[in-house]
Amino acid sequence: SIVVIVALVALAAPASAGTLTAEAVFDQLKDLAGTWQGMTEGEGEAAEAPSEVTHRIEVSAGGTVVMETMQPETDHEMINMYHLDGDDLLLTHYCAGGNQPRMKLDLAASNDQKLVFDFVGGTNLDPSVDGHIHAAEIQMIDGDHMDSIWQGWSEGKHQGTMTFHLARID
Image 1 (cartoon, rainbow, N blue to C red):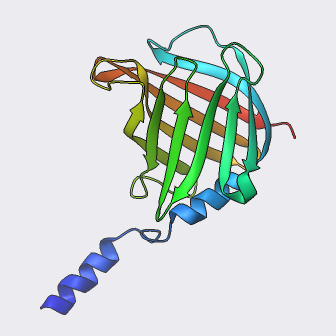
Image 2 (image 1 turned 135 degrees about the vertical axis):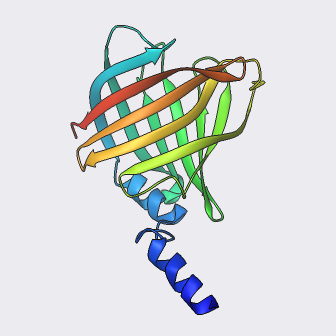
Image 3 (image 1 turned 90 degrees about the horizontal axis):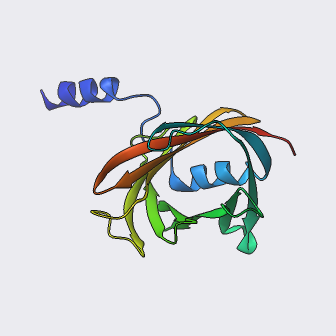
């Protein structure tokens, strides 16, 4: 019967399905405020010698935006802005390359420890040609450690991944 089918579907669904919201994730991002340091690790075209990095995370605009500054006060400084748009959480990456890819939190692919952001557009780029950040993932290890993973695309396909292994220092 239909009741049995509905019950089986409910049992098959993960326990956390539907409990994660953009607002809850945004609050989780606010809790990351502080200075983070760590090392890089690259794959594909992003492969290079590991280097030390600093990320500074701040809550701004009356608590409506989380601003992450990657490599503050360097020639490679970049800004990530996270904000709610209705039921969605958006990320805009202000790249040192001069483009601004936009990504949206994929609630279905995310959980409390892994936040997945997928490309939804951008400015100053043609995603079928230009190099840009196309996806991002934040993996929470614990309250003071995280991995920030960025996928680079060019000519319409994945070109490499850069991972920032970060620890909170304040």
